[in-house]
Length: 328
Image (tube, rainbow, N blue to C red; front, side, top):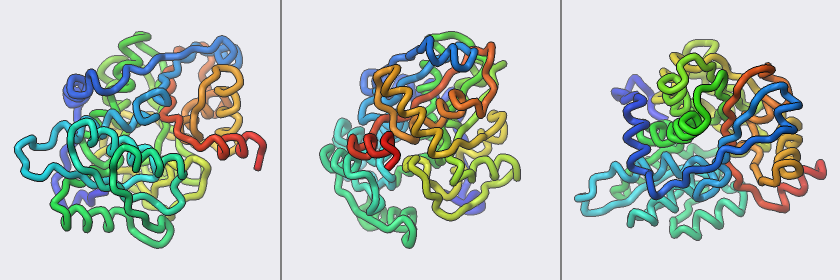
């Protein structure tokens, strides 16, 4: 969100992830790590699925949102936050704010999934809509924050958000031990950056790979070019990863600690959703399937390896879920 030429960046470290773990303890769920013999047979690997689709508010985003809000000055006369999101960060900030007695305003695209809009409002947040193809959500959010004297909490380009997201991989490696490979969904890069911090500290020999939708490979382009690349708003069923660029706070971490970024198609996401529903009896949204799709679809070679996979969320309207599986 922030241009590095206009401000000094505060790049989080693994110490920040550990501090976040303490802050969110008792608020965020320690989500289960799931396994599947069928998935292991298909890939020739030993797979560990970190089920953040079972996190509070339905996605890993709750971790970063709660941590960021927990760092606000408790003596401030008006505790209020503004966030922008297509859905999961929106719900996470709304819920985390409610739990901590903070007012929340969320800027959401007009075409955000209705189930995510309803949940955000259900947590007590004020929702302001914008057109993702013609309006700048960051500019709108900054204006609202200035007008209301609120703190802006972006979905991924924020050191406390990144640190909070890193706690998911911390828990995964703490539970299963060192792994050979960690595969993580990539939208704006908060989850991937935080996960890389944890992996490098707790399983230093492991490779870290990010996965984004084929239609929006800004992260892949950025990593290969060595600078943040901006793209037009992509179109994909992975609505949680439809960003135009990765964050400036997380890009240095991606450069230093991520081995590669690959992409998957919408068709691969649908097949992975189907696998989780039919074989593992869990509901995972398209964005949440990014990492698993790359492994299950063979985009990433994993034979003989111990592989950690983050399932980032499970917030999807059931009618939409059914129509995707029916190919409509």
